[in-house]
Amino acid sequence: MKIINARLRHKPELYTVTIADGKFSAIQTQQGELAAQDGDTDAGGNLLCAPFVEPHIHLDAALTAGEPAWNQSGTLFEGIERWGERKPLLSEDDIRSRAMATIELLVQNGVQAIRTHADTTDPSLIGVKTLCAIRDELKDKITLQVVAFPQDGMMASAEATRQMEEALEIGCDVVGGIPHFEYTRELGEQSVKHLLALARQYDRLVDVHCDEIDDPNSRFLEVLACEAMFHDMGARVTASHTTAMHSYDNAYCSKLFRLLKNSGINFVSCPTESIHLQGRFDTYPKRRGVTRVKELRDAGMNVCLGEDSIFDPWYSLGNGRLLRTLDFAMHICQMMGYQDFASALDFITDNSARTLCLENYGIAVGNPASFILLDGEDDYSVLRKQGDVLLSVRNGKVIMQRRPAEVMTAPWITPPAFARH
Ligand code: 17E
Ligand code: FE2
Image (cartoon, rainbow, N blue to C red):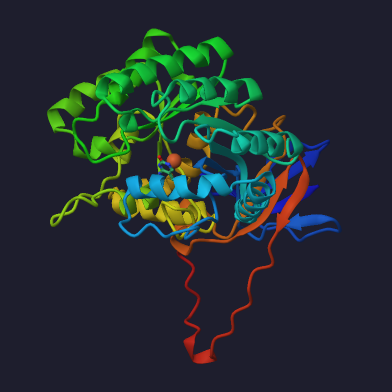
């Protein structure tokens, strides 16, 4: 496979990218535009980019909004309650069909690696079993990581604690937690220490729903970061949501950032989810309730973005388009400067790949030939246009191709050539 007339991120020239045996074998600068020969794929000046990565989604709950009842208040807590009513209705077929439909949506929109949470507080553990089975079945097609996620709290009962361990025995890749939802602060702290110990015992990654609440006193992030640092696990640990950080006192936050930086942990923000679920106990002014994405990034930490939900008890929109999530983040976190736009795609590509500890990710000679082709010439234009994913190639094989829609406008609408972004 040979792709001509491709643009690469942060590079002005056109490139020819050659693939052999499922790997990138050459990446060469062109002298101007080339005419396609037989068999060449013409990128048409569009952006060849590393695949999108969805670092945080709940595939077991996806596509269940309104079943059996809708979340009326829009709070996280009512979402947990509504999901509690849906859980007894779960079956393997039910989870499998919804998870596969959601994975298809993600693949259609350029995603090739997914980290999904699987609720471990359902006594049957059917979500864990089904998602681990799907992961194994799809292993040559996409990367799927399954997080053992104790939705109702891992310290809520002896059974809940035991089921976490059972989920790891079944084969979850990542240990989760929900310290802000445990009954007491003390149990929350214990849960963080316990889940990190489990991660060491079973040699797994860590991704905690951490401080997903507007309470400025919810400070489990410092426990997670400190424990990760003391055990030298930072690169393998992720704090998801951390929305309480939005409400932390600035002086505390300044002190906290030193620890966060030293710990080397990763962060996932889900801006569409958090702008919707947080601030729900405020009148006006209302908090945005999204973690400090810009400040974490500017302090040199690894932050990426996920959708969290697609049509589930917590969030009844969502469509698998990480570019939409990115657009929200740029607005909500006020990252609207030129430099922000110029590297915006980091948040849904390189940074998420680092969070998932993916190996051999990216467009480089010798790496697996996995990439997407985006309608746009650089980060800025793809973001602004919300450019479609035109092609998705995994290990040299096409897994998705989109024919761009043809749109006709009256001749008087066509302006003189206007090319800039
Ligand atoms: N569960 C949770 O605790 N928080 C969320 N945002 C979702 C599920 C979607
Ligand atoms: Fe989540």
